[in-house]
Image (cartoon, rainbow, N blue to C red):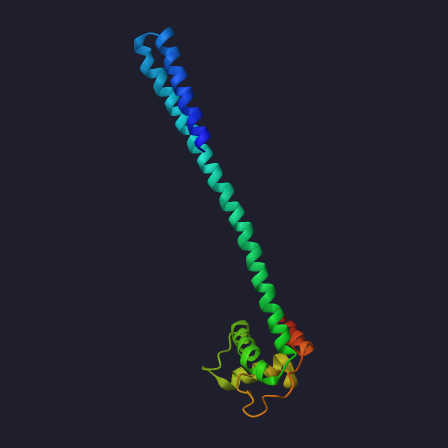
Length: 161
């Protein structure tokens, strides 16, 4: 940008010198004003273009970082689905229950019976036990979780809603 400003100043000086030598003194101010206006408009255009290019590069970097975070969270959730029931109850069950509430519009706080009935209709008895927020194990924390297949089946059924 400094190079463009220096070039603009040089153009203004050259035009003023030519205007002094060739033109009438009355036209000198008009010519100098037009050249200064053109230089300022060109600098403004370059500045806006440069800012737009910088913003585009930031968006690409933001998208890549967002994708990396999403991939990391997904890998973590999959690893937790294959670990113990304690991990499932702490990390996956609350997320799945919240997504179920958002997808179906059934709120547990409003009508618990309708909430459970909708869950059993959508997931079936076996999978609903892994989504139901009231089915947290208080004693069997070291039991194995349902695994990746159950998580995939739950997510597929929820995606159909």
